[in-house]
Image (cartoon, rainbow, N blue to C red; front, side):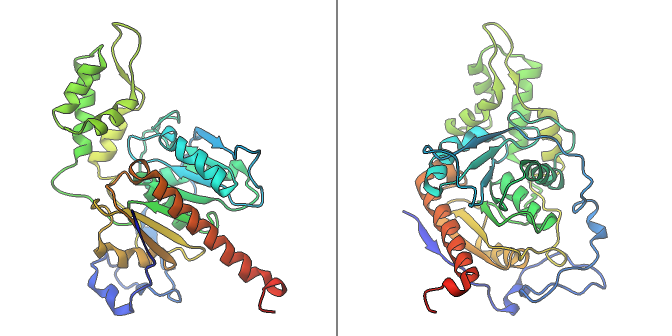
Length: 346
């Protein structure tokens, strides 16, 4: 089973133990809700720009089986991780739609699934696409943004870029930190093997592509997941990639997927609650990054699930329970606060 753990913000001094990027002659955000992170962000480039070209995201909408979702409730938008697509969370989304009595939207991020391909692939551009998607949907209520891994950083970036857009944000096994490593990335090896299989050898049998992946990835479940990005074609036709391996490979090698182009001294989101769900057997959200999470998202909670990085697929029931409890509790708290003369203590 999983453990539920509310995490309160530590004392201000605790944050000093975390090494963060400093900005010369700029006052620092100290981790408290009263401290303002509103200094010049010019050195962040266009990470906060609203002029980044966006693409129309492909999506699936899942409504409660007993009719349309409650329009008075915030819809939930789920963003997948690297090499994923909107189909990854289809089963979970259907269950959430019934459990939460609202519409659930599963989106394909740019360069994945059925969404358009674009040369730029980083968190500002990924977030820009999600922002435009929300605007075009014209929701009655602010949406709740949920993302896994790469999708997690994407929805966190949305909150920093467009603070008024989300009602809540939920990060599944990722954190707003730069996780680039000099040792290289296993994801780069995946890309290399897939390109060799599809571009150099032009295999016609998916088993040959799998064998090429097996040279760098022994886990058959991971390989099966990666192969969902392949078009098997007709008999004797080469296997091709559904996703732009060259664009994704360049983004990985450039550190765009592992990095985090924001600064907690300059950016924070205090417009709503944030939930961080992490796998206890994963290394993506270690305890020592929790103080940094608190700097970006002062009103945050952490929940632990006994699993690895693939929280949603490994423990779908626990994920649904945790997410539903968080959303319903926060909505009840908001309703109580806004209830005024309707509250039971009057």
